[in-house]
Length: 194
Image 1 (tube, rainbow, N blue to C red):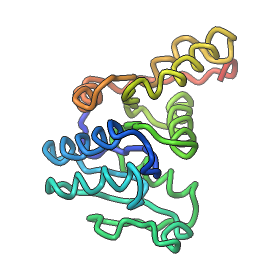
Image 2 (image 1 turned 135 degrees about the vertical axis):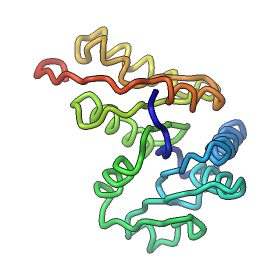
Image 3 (image 1 turned 180 degrees about the horizontal axis):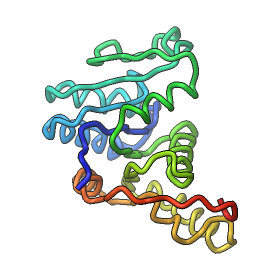
């Protein structure tokens, strides 16, 4: 069984999303704190990121935010984090978040969340990590992503077995059991269809 002590959560910085997305972030935050799992996140105090971090902290959990200096200068950094790591770039931010985490969870978000999701899935495909990745499909938000990947497989740009690089769940309550159940898998790098 995978030992999950810290989880990196990718999610939106907008607060204009559905109320059910806000509720999901709050529930995940409370659940992480209850299970003594440290939250690793993008360090922002806005949107789902802020809601999630606030929920972990309110429930007595620990939060590590990782934010690039140019965003911190715009005063969007979450100053109440247990630890706030300032990086010199977006690239070093993502690298540091990955290093600190035992697994990854994706909640609804925008282009930044999509970028982080594809990067961490690709890193797993290339064998750069073997940590579990769980996408939480709140209200069908990520179904178009699933359909896109299925189309990439059908068009022979992605191998069918790479569909298992991440797992999709439909509720917050499934997140930690799914992360814990996933065994690290050996990853094979193939020059074709990467």
